[in-house]
Image (cartoon, rainbow, N blue to C red; front, side):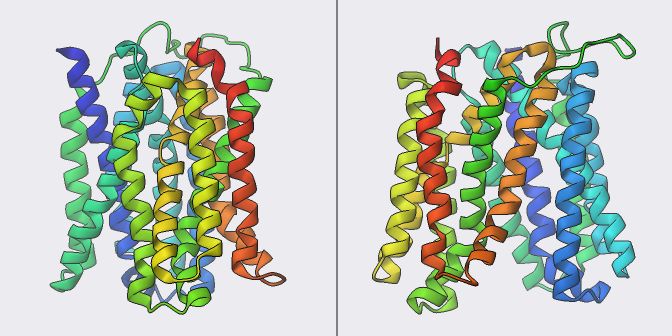
Length: 382
């Protein structure tokens, strides 16, 4: 059962990526204090992390088209596992900057590589399965919250915590390596072989725009859902945390079942309907009269967004299998820009309008994604 083994190994890689990133995230306060970084400085360092991830996506796409997604996934997985301890070892802002630059580079590379490999596995299966891979990324993050939070609670040294996470990452990556699909002539090119530059085209541009808009909306949920409940509805910090919790839970659960829906109605119809559900959910949150209603609305928002972006990645990877890495890097890169830009755009707008009014931007983005999705995804369904 080589194909089923490849699928399970790809699940493991996605979960590992979510787990390692989550272990860094839960330890940010401790690492900030160890290095003496101010809140403002930390913000710049997180931008550095994002910028190096974008670079890693670009480089990763180039490498995938030459050596195959499985090879790049393994190398990036080992690199990410080794580099996750870097922030914990840093004792200065400069050291933390180097560590986060390295971490971001490998994270961007594995992001595009694991998605490229997921597209190959999906293509071999002949049916939609890509959303489930993204569900395992979310599950990895949840595991990190539980494990990392538990280690913090018992007073474990952050250096040992992240060293243990990195060691586990090396073991998982090496265990998954042999079961990943081998490079094929359709997806890889021998190093040094001349190749014409993979051009942008209208369909790729629309896919990139769709990824940007919906990941912008997702970024708003990450950074502003709890603030919305606390500031706009007067909820306690404990209750406000349930807004993001509800969003995350529905995102994970829907990703586990979205592939079955896509198989029945097609990617274009799925995204068209799901993006509308997302818009309704966020509008409901913006208009909610109470914290309970708002939490339910954020959960609906997660239901709508959960399975959309994986369809864009799948479509990009199938435009031209020989250039899947390059095309995926462009779409994932634009999506990542949206994820970074969304919270910042909302923050700027709140200088002039209430937070709930600023939510108009992601709501319109969801509606536009629903309108544009058929033109980008219908060919994939055919």
